[in-house]
Image (tube, rainbow, N blue to C red; front, side, top):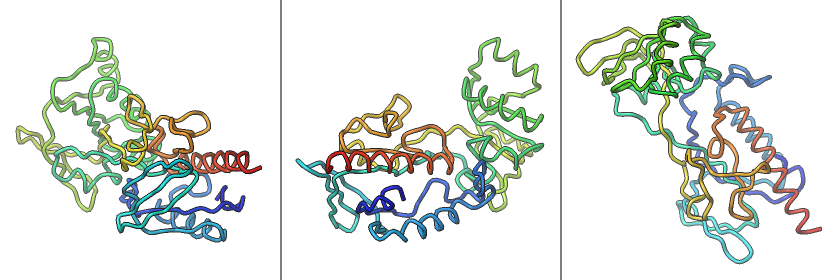
Length: 280
């Protein structure tokens, strides 16, 4: 939108598979609190395409290369497009654990973020699938929302004596057995099944799952990644490759619709500024 309002020619290539596609509601977004991410995205697309210089292509970008004066993006159908600048807003792809029912519940009652989902899951019997510092961090936040918390470490618990004391003080239980199945109804968790066959009733589960970049185009262009696996950007959303910018989940740990929108607006303004300086 920032680029369209500045009369810059823009092509949006989108395959329509965001990581939040199963999420029923978006929260912490003033004026849009409780709305489905898909509805917000559809409204955004409608508004952005009102600007004549912005076009939309329903496709998947699969290759990217840098020429002397521009970039070339190739789609799954073999079409090629050239551009002076790139904004990579491809997000990340969560890697689901080998737990039956996990993927079906992801984004519904198996969630990653207390800020995004915690209020709706308040006062429920809640599990945390994580270990060590990640588990402790999640537990401290979830403890504000419910007092019935169990940490599933998926193996030997990795807590210091001081951390264990803190968990005990807050009556947070630890289970080291592996989870093999989440029994659910249309994504609503009903129970957790452990490797030893024990079945425990639960209503919700927080999970710190690993991720990978949704697109390998940034890597093929030479964009550096951080130690955590995000695209490295500076304060102006510039990557380590001149002319390539990044925004959203692929370049920061604040995974929410409102933060992605903020980053997109900022990146668009920075690209416009750079193009303007080069052309003026």
